[in-house]
Image (cartoon, rainbow, N blue to C red; front, side, top):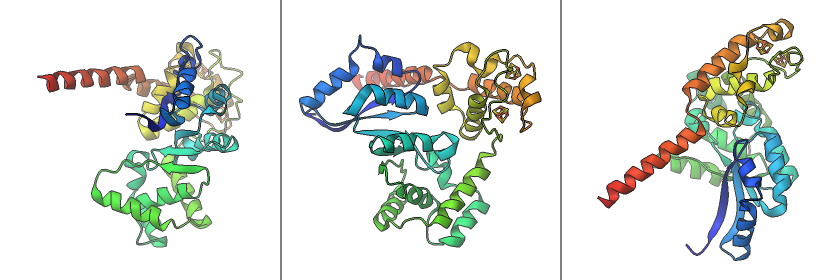
Length: 291
Ligand code: SF4
Ligand code: SF4
C-alpha cells in the first residue's frame, strides 16, 4: 500500500496507554511523521478505555487524533459509560466512529416482548435498524461499523441508512426503557457511601458497575479493563467483612456481587491471552499455507 486513508492506533485503554505515552518508543511521533509523509491521510484510534483514561490520551495526543472509534449503542450509553466518552469526544470536536452498534448482535435479537413493543410503533422495520437509527440521532457520530453476516442484513442496513429517518423522542425513550430492563442491573447510584469503610480500599461502585457489565456481556471487555488493575484492587481482594453492605442505601449484597465478578473474571481469558491465541492461530495458518 502507498498510503492508508484512515489509520487507527489499536485500543488505547488502561493497559496500553502507558506504552503509547512512553517517550522511549516515540509511537505518536512515528505516526505524526507518517501523516507528514502522506502515508496516512487521517490518523485516529480505537478505545475501550474509561472516560478518564480517554481524556488523558487526548491531552497527550493534542490535535493529532482526527477520529476515535468507541463501543457505542443504546445499551452501552449507560452500561459502559459511553455517554461520557461521546460527550468528551464531541466537546473536543473529534468525530466518533462506532463499533458494536448492535452489541455483537444482541440488540438485533430482543425478547419477543421487546420486539413486539418496537413492531407496534414501526411494523416494517427490523429490530437492528432501531439501534442504527438511535445512533443517527447523535450528531457527533460520523461512521457506524456493523458486523453484517449475510446479504439480508447488508440490505437492511443500506435501507436504514439510505432512508435516514430520524428517531422520535418517544422511540428513543422506548429504547432507553428497554435498555434498563435488559441490564437487570444492581441499582448502584455511585453515592460512594460504601467506600470509606472498605478495609481493602476497593473502588466499590466501579466494581459494581463492572459486575453489571460482565453479567450482561460475558465479561471480555471487563477483563480487558481489569488487566491494568492492581491485584489488590480487584474483586477477589474483598475480604467479605460486610461493612459496605451494611451502609449501602440500595441494600446491595456487595460481597456476593464481588465474589461472582471474581469468578467471571477467572473464567474469562485476559486480553494478553486472547492476543497470544490469535498470534498462535496466525502462525499455524501461515505454516499451513507454506505447506
Ligand atoms: S465486604 Fe469487601 S468490598 Fe465490602 S467493605 Fe469489606 S472488603 Fe470492602
Ligand atoms: S453504597 Fe451502594 S449505591 Fe452507594 S456506591 Fe456503594 S454500592 Fe453503590
